[in-house]
Image (cartoon, rainbow, N blue to C red; front, side):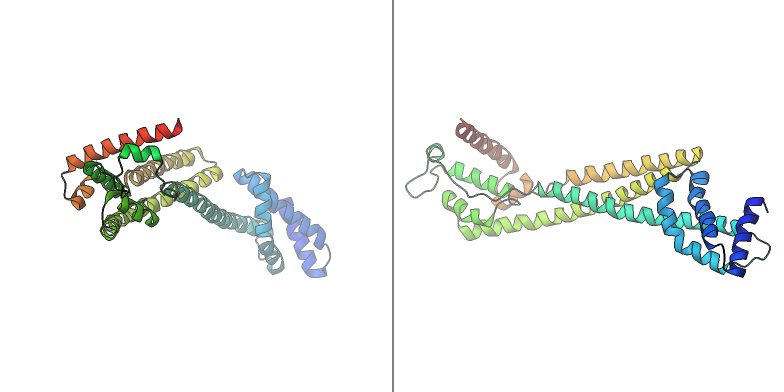
Length: 291
């Protein structure tokens, strides 16, 4: 046993025997506990202080229950600190992972919320009525244009509000119940896609948590070989996370042109060209409104 070890052990034995010297004993042990992580693991002052608060109750129990049997208190304290440092690091990682997971999930939900169009009242200006050629009954006179507007409605089934269904049925001459049932049918298919999005989202979250854990582990690692190994793991996890993100973004919640063609009983080519033409027409109307 070295001189410093003998001093701490002597202080404990003297306190246990006489009840004196508690302040000096507590100061010596506390200084050792605070300095140990910095000297042996390179922790900064904040981490050392947090660990001391975490370790303090156990430190008191070690002092109270210490019995000298040939091994100094400092040796026992070292082994206990090393073990508790690992527990402390794991606890910090769990808290960080939960925080990062919540933050990342909020980011994903905010991104998904952008996919939902805001609900606005469907208004038709006088210029639009003239361009779309409404008849006296408020129905678009051109049958081909009515069909193309239905194509566009079905294509955006995920975004069409129920309040708009009546207006769309009115201007296209389509029965309201038929339009609503078709939209619901296409939305069911969209729900299946949403389940795929959820799967990719879970994979993203899992990879993100693992990435945060590895980054925290790298902060505590002082071995160059260990840090290099962690870097390789980080690259693998980042690749897995990017693949999940690409997969999630590749899934479109809205119906495909082929699905719209099936519910309307038309060739897919007609849907492709019809959507292009009606979007071009509506785009010109919007430009006129801006002017």
